[in-house]
Image 1: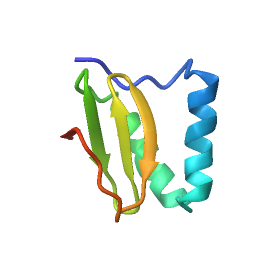
Image 2: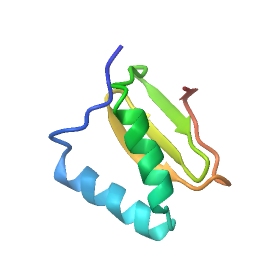
Image 3: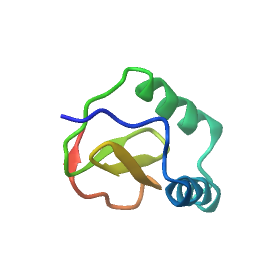
Image 4: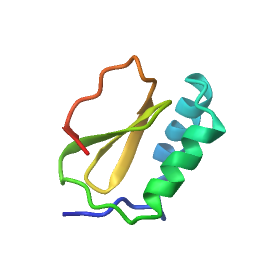
Length: 80
């Protein structure tokens, strides 16, 4: 199983993630929760997956986080 990639994120994807943080008003506490989880070097499925946090959901595919959702948005894939 792959691990979440934290370096060398493609620039367009990085810009998309930053935009989602701003558009969806994802706060510092949610980003800190994400950072704490990433610090554990988590393994994720090769296909679509999502990880729920108190104030957001991180959605990914394989090693890459692809977007952030608000708690009211419905993710798809394997829940971690």
